[in-house]
Image (cartoon, one colour):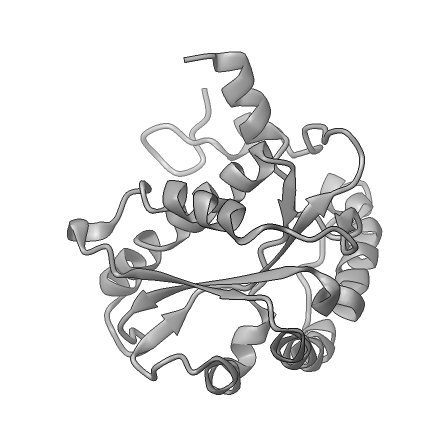
Length: 215
């Protein structure tokens, strides 16, 4: 395996918001190709209970984006974790907020929405069952994003529309026993490449054998 190429893919797959090219169409076969790869991801007990809702209809994308914007207004008012002014995450937040607002205002212009789903409802299930459910769909979504990135497509993992999951299900005809996991606007990205993001040191968040114990 080409480690350099693999590492570059893994460290430069970003949540793309401002650099989505809304003007360039995507052929359906390219999305299907990425989904083919996504279904090679791990799945709990080999259930393969995933499904992928691809939305290209303009009216349905607009209706979903309106739900997202309604949720975004609520999300913007929620309390945030307060961090030191010198914390890397604090410094990055204005840029993140700016790009998130841009996406909320324009997301229906993306040529494709992808909504990954999993069989069952787990709201009242024990934690291990919920973890197993999300562990059976989220790796597939990440694989989709990696496959898309390798083909020049950008995406942003969003979940705010899930505040109104039932309304979204009604728009798309999704059965009531299916759980939506995310909404990804997908488009070709502008520019040539992405760089690794600035992150807090992994050594600061890695503990060995006991919580808080570092090497």
